[in-house]
Image 1 (cartoon, rainbow, N blue to C red):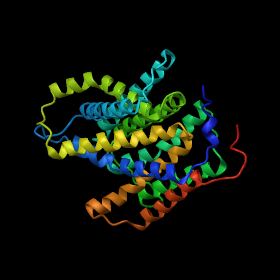
Image 2 (image 1 turned 30 degrees about the horizontal axis):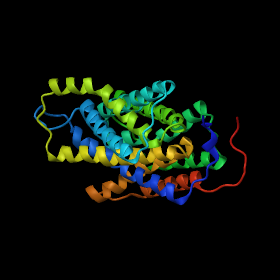
Image 3 (image 1 turned 90 degrees about the vertical axis):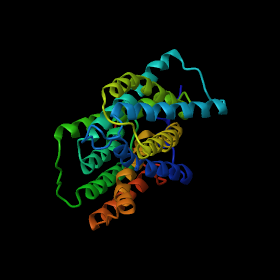
Image 4 (image 1 turned 120 degrees about the horizontal axis):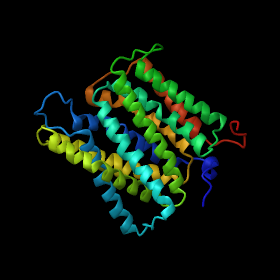
Length: 316
């Protein structure tokens, strides 16, 4: 069995860094797509999907697509009995609980608050990886995480002082979802030391969709909204094919080679791209604080992935 800390000293090369960066840019559009699919829920006749249904459809279809791709490549492996619990945890926490809770909470909180909370996920992943996998962070990597978080803070609050308003309960729900996802990344890291990354992603999605299915069926039966229209299904297609099959496939493929704590720094790109997408699709103008934050985010990613010498790791 591979040592989970063995990848802690693997240096990033340009190809994988660009690939993961692209995945995070595409992931940045997932909140927009989810908002379209979920809707505001302000009227019973709206043609929108419920949170359980959206999560079940998204990951059920994406899991099946990945399964067909893996079978065609001949990379499927039998799951050892000792690893079944790990896959079940991955599907339950990383998919079912994360996205049912996240989609349920994001309808009742603002986009600004959600962005700020999502920005904390790399810190959660690095902290859990440090505690569970004993991954050591180089001094520059730690500085990169701090710089990235500072940049996201400036982008979100547009200044030095926070101006957060909205439902505290909803924010707590979203934060809980991010803790689930951060923990699942650590579980997935262990599994990728024994199975192909795409297989880990596929099984996690299929198991998560299976857990969600009873709740999705009950939601469809009791929900009185109209049938989703083309706009909603286009959003679901983006979430399923691009954000799940492609982006999660990239994440878990690279998770086998690189430490999850350093990969987490790339997630800062998602809130960085929020103002960019706002400018492209909503004609919003980037302010000075957003530009300053963007510079800090990119600096943080560079500090994490840049080649370094044999300097000692952080303590412990």
